[in-house]
Image (cartoon, rainbow, N blue to C red):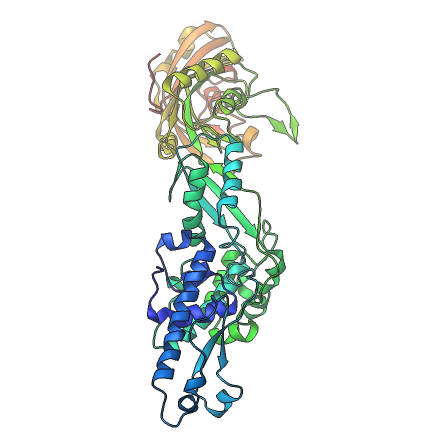
Length: 542
C-alpha cells in the first residue's frame, strides 16, 4: 500500500489527469518513504488508480443509495451505471450529463477512465520513468568499471536541466491551489526533489551492478549523471523578461539560464506573474531527457615529503619564457612523473616551503613539498608501496632526491605554509671580493647578530613581484676564509630573505649589504640552501 492519505486524493487526481508520472505524484504528495519510489512505475500507477477509483466509486454508491429528494439522481437511480470498470490510466472530471454543470454549479461529477498510451511525464521529463531503472544502472556501472578506480564507497549525484525547475514550479502552484481550497497547505520544500527520488531509486540498483559496493551520502568517489532536454529549453525564456537581473552572461557558461539563476528567478517572481506566462499543465514533451556521459571523479589525494636538489641548472618548476621552454626538466616534473603513474592521477598541483633559484642547490634535510593529485584512480598505497615509490623517484635521476614521502590530509597541507615568514633558513654562499682580503678582514662578520635588512623588491624578480620594501633579519653569520678573493659565508636568516641581494647589494636596493660592510664590491658565485626549518612533514625513519 502506498503511504497516502485521504487529503492526497485531489492532488493525485489533478496530477494524473495533467500528465504526471506515478513517481512525480508521490513527490507532490510529499511521500518520503524511499521504498515507494523503488516499486516498478506501472505497479505504482495501478495502486494510484485503485486509490482514486475506490474514492470516486464510493461517492457514486453513496449518491445512488441516498439520492436527494426530487433530484435527477433520485429519479434515475435505477438506471445508473454500476461502480467499477477497467483500471484507470488517466482520470478526467466530466459532468454527469451534458449541460448539468451549467444548470447546477455544485452538481456531482463522476470520474471516467480515458484509455491512452502513457507519455513522457510533464514534471520530470522522463527522468523518473524509463531513465530510472535497471538499464540505466547497468550503463552507470559499466562506465565506473571502465574507469578502473579503486574505491570502497561511492556517492551518486545527478545534474538536471534548468527547465525542470519551471515545470515543477507550475505543478506546485496548482497543487497548492487545490489544497488551499481544501483548507490544506503545501510548501515548496515539502515536495520531494527529483534528484532525491532518482537517487532513492538508483542507489540500490547501481550498488547491485557493482557487486554490493555501498552507495552513500558522502564519499571520496563521486559518480555523476547529467541529463539534458533540448526540446524544452525555451521553458525558461520568459523569466529573462520578468526577472532580467537574475540572468547575467558569464565567460564559462554556454547559457545564462543556469539552474541556480532559474531558481533565483522563481523565488522572486509572483505567482500571478508566473501563471500569466506559463501554463498548467506544462506542455507534454515528445521525448524524454537525454542522459549524457556518466562522469567519475575521485577526491584529491595529498602527498608530502622533502626534496634535495643537487644540480645548478634545474628549476623548481618548468621554466617558460614567452611560451618557450628554457630547461628540459624541473624538480616538480622529476617527482611528479612516478607519482602520477603510481596513483593513476589525471593531474597535480605542486607547492613547497619557499623555492630556490635555478642555480641554487638544496642540501641537508631538504625542502618540504606537497602535491595535490587530481582525480586519482588509485587513492591508497601501503607504507611499503610509498617506500618503493620514493626509491623509484630517487633512481630516476641523480639531480634530485626525495625523503619522508607520505600521504597526508588536506588539513595537514596548511602546516607547510603556517608562519612561513617566521621560520628560519640556513645558507652557504661563496663570496667574491674585488679587493684582496685576509682572514682578519672578515672576522668581524662572525660577531654580527640579528641584522635587520631593508630589501626593496630585487630587479631580477620585479617582473613578477610587487614593488615594496620588505624587512628581513639575518640572525647570525659565520665566515670561512678561502683565498685573497673568496670566502664562504654561512647565514641563518628569516625565511624570505634575498641572500644574493644581501651579498652584492642589488645597486643599493638592499641595505645594509655585504659590499657596504666590507667597504668593497662583492658578488655571490654559488649559493646552497643548507636547511629549511619547517617541522613538517613528519620524519620517516629510513
